[in-house]
Length: 437
Ligand code: ASP
Image (cartoon, rainbow, N blue to C red; front, top):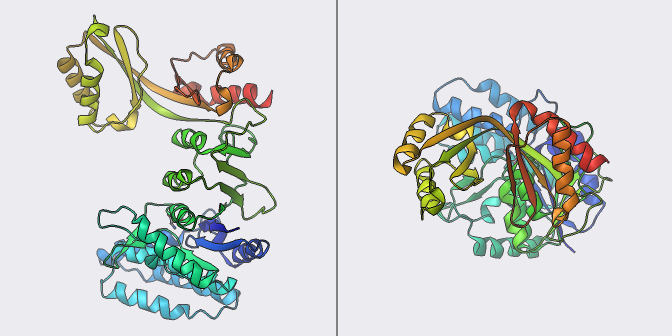
């Protein structure tokens, strides 16, 4: 049994968090592969090391004084090392970095990756695990895609050789050896890619919450935690705003069916959320509710639209030309609604409307602004006639009109559109009705 344990920045913010991590690792001998982010915030007003490194690079580039920022970074690593009485010669590593900065010979990717690199050096010493640099395992092709074959070879060789390893997250290397960063929050991806390469039994993602919540805690009082969720359900929820994991972390493990367990470093006894491909039934009718505000619906009217072959395809091409991603397409006989995010047409809405009107020879375009979308997600919804009834009954009882309704073909989600101003009220009532009753 092999467990990969990835720890996020909040689990690594200072010495006390390192101690918790060690306890977690030592409590289960299967936890032999550890991936770390960079030191995170100790308190909400604190800075993440990653953010400081980005700022340091910008200051270097623009010849702005950076000594204070550098001292903050320097001190944070030295403090953890000293508090844990480790032997890592961290000053030497830090000196090397600042010399490169002083000579302006450092790429942003290299400099920012040092957050994870130094954190992993400290953690490996503290755990007595072998430090394995991500540049020697996480291989990228020059086109920026993962070289999965090379990753599998390198990861397995290192694991076989050392048995217990700590790998910095968030970066890898091109064939030239140059460092490449992933997108923000990328340590989740490193965890996922490594979990797959090593075919571990479980990928544990340790963070500061006890799993994924069934609803947004900013809207709902104390929402319950989801104990089991499928990868597909999670995709639906994260797409609609529930964010716990980096989106790109799901696919690599979903393909090889490695379960992912989200756990809380500050409450390690909590079981957290397990994400897998098993279609297990939850105690509730639904798995969760998520949603986003600020959508816009463009309703296109044209007589005889339904008889016109290729109308939708021509419509889509116009949106594609503007690189606008379409969220939903509710259709009528001679009209079709195109739901997009407001943000995507911030600068070119009128131009887009003109093009739609003239190229598609429309009779009219109606713009419905300030829409919010609510997604009710769950594999249990399939064929559940009562549930759909309950949803609309709830909305009608609170006087909210569902202007857009769409159910995915797999019946994994049901999306309703409401006014932005009614969003919170609708989410709260739906949650009460579908989860708490
Ligand atoms: N430290 C990086 C970030 O802040 C990567 C990560 O935490 O996963 O985005």
